[in-house]
Amino acid sequence: MEKFLLVLFAYLLGSVLPGEIIAKLKGVNLREVGSGNVGATNVSRVLGKKFGALVFFLDMLKGFIPTYLAISFYGVESKAVMFAGIASVLGHMFSIFDRFRGGKGVATAFGVILAVSFKLALLSLLVWFVILQWKRYVSLASITASVVAPLLFLISGYPSHIFLMGIVIAVLIVYKHKPNIDRLLRGQELKV
Image 1 (cartoon, rainbow, N blue to C red):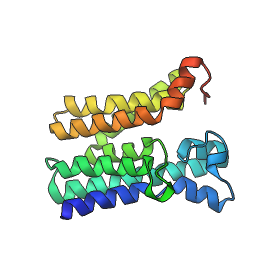
Image 2: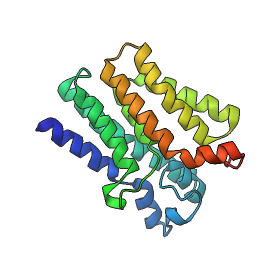
Image 3: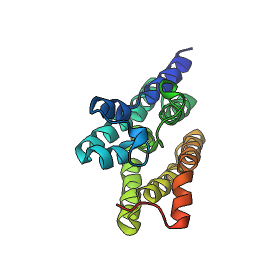
Image 4: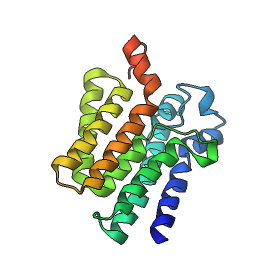
């Protein structure tokens, strides 16, 4: 029962959308401006980098807190870690507070990785940064880093359910980036 409540907490926390809240406080509807997304990248474009950084940090905490709690209470060997991590990302992507709409889950997924391993989070961030500097597409950098993360879990010897968690989150992130992938293939994706 405790593990179920932790997973429910992870989903509900993930469902809180700081980007949407901050934008509304500033009199902006993020769904109607920029990319229409409620995440840090669109907030940066619409409200400025300071607000984008704040949204990234808050979205990251949504993945970090429940995953860290699961590890603290049950150990990384527990499947509760996998379910808490996935639930937080699902909450961000399919928010119960926003008619099951949400963001793309990248910052929240980063928080999950950070809770599992600071070192692997830094490596994922490095992959993201290198791709961003090379190709200048936030979406491509995010997709690449999300696909690399489970491989990092695998080669670092984490339990198989942590690798599976990484795979599920990567698939979800790629799915949420489908419009970006279509624009990349057509040469219409916005660069930074």
